[in-house]
Length: 383
Ligand SMILES: NC(=O)CC[C@H](N)C(=O)O
Image (cartoon, rainbow, N blue to C red):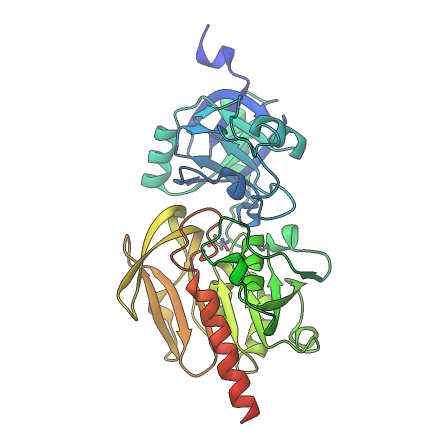
């Protein structure tokens, strides 16, 4: 029997390439930008990172699912990606913390999974030709039909995907880091600051880190205005990660522009890109993005190399930086901007994920740096 004949799912890319495999999780048909993540572990955090909304995520590590799924290591209410592609699915997880298998988890969440394809071939294609739109289907296995659907589907460029994942209303966050944190949980700081976190699709471990270093956090929807945020009387504002292209998020850029200079600002990933746009820089789309847990980043202020967790397909264009933006971190793989600060206002950001979840904890110091910025601003305002 041919590969196609025994397949139960098909992934077709807009460039005409087709991959037949076996379906797991839910059934149906989805469209999304096909990207890859090179992390060996952390699939529970990857699945629940709202930044993957609109994307079909391929894991390069060949065996996925072997430690199951638990509901402690999640970064949002549930999976937000369009579909999940792996080489080999483990259907019999072995882990005392596992609450259900990856197959059952995705089925309950309505997410389609595809296993048994040559993920190396798919990733080599994405690396050489760039991320591309794809269609994954368990109901239409006709390659030409699926290729046509992929070619007709809208690109992720220009889409506002934040509206799909941001919270409908504000809420308070109190949970600190778990027992696996490098910041000693028992030494967590007493509450020192009130931070308003603008949620564009926020990873919960960012909130756990902010709470751990002594922040009382009010989370507000990504569409909140500067007036609504200032009315909460924060000591600082945090700009979260999130999905899609930063450029069409004009409401967010306007809010940040109105907040600049009024109080300390710290941004991560999408928040970093939005801060750059608000300050006058431009963003652009990377060929295939940075998604993994071992991206080397140089901290230009102390020349230390941080191994970082990353998930982004856009970046700030170094050729468009205004005079008041200083680059503080660079990616050692491709020299792209990984961190910046404004020289004339209390605002800084990083493109990568210092909260890890999953990945290295090298960059947790940035949450303390945000507290120092709030201390500095508080000192100035009392002076
Ligand atoms: N994790 C993020 O915040 C991603 C930012 C943006 N959506 C990008 O892909 O570059």
